[in-house]
Figure 1: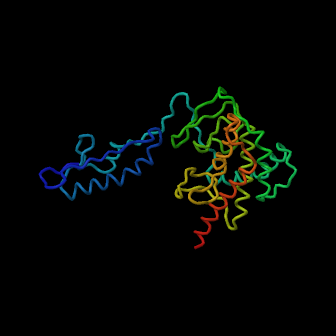
Figure 2: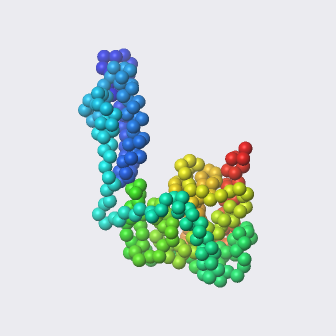
Figure 3: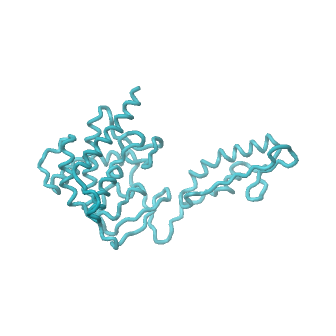
Length: 281
């Protein structure tokens, strides 16, 4: 933008970069619209001219300027990539996720020969994780995978001919393709069971669909509200699951133990209770 012949600031340069060029244009256009409005108002009040790539657009309608700066084009799926659109809304998925709870508990009893009652108590977690650790396995690194794109333009890797849990690929960061099918099913069940332990430890807390805010990354996924960010079941357990794989690859690293899950639970309860206490004030 330029205001020749006036004292003080004579030119103002604004540069907008597209960090996610494969994403749909709607979000970027929504963010750019108020910027265009501000620049047009500055030009009007100062008698300046508004340029886009050396073209004078001062007298053009905002929509025309927006189309120049950020065309509203359809999502482009690169060659060799498949598009995945989840079959249900986040709210529908939350209900489906919770409805599978009993099946997850049955899997734990079957796969781990777990005779102790799954009573959602803190004391039940260390024995549960101790039994799970030997069964956590990695998929061969050369196992075939395909590249998948979501509607938001994010991409992930999906194992070919695999039996995957319902959450796999609903978010681009929820795609641990190096875990075996059996490992993902087991961690899915343990994550749900542990999160239910946390939920029942803090009265009044309920499952929710993650929204924007509280540093949330997993927008639209089932979470327990917590501070500073909500707890998404699978990603929350990655640190202690990763410790198992690290120790297995390098025995000189600290050995994974059942107490890891108990320590995770204590931290999670503290985070959930902290937000619940803030909301009650």
